Image 1 (cartoon, one colour):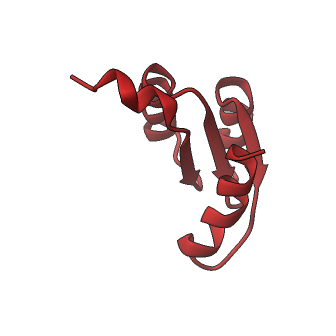
Image 2 (cartoon, rainbow, N blue to C red):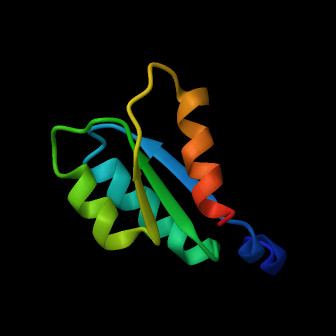
Length: 79
């Protein structure tokens, strides 16, 4: 069980062509966080459309590494 205090934390999900994994991840994240930000890194599948429908905010960010992708997600979650 997740403590109720965790509901005060935004969740940033970073992905590319995640398909069903993204769906499961966003459903779980939305149950536990006050805000979910999906940062997509150039998906060619339906990840962007699904993320746009389900996440509180969507950010497109094409970077070579995951660390660089965290920056737009964290900025979005703190605005």
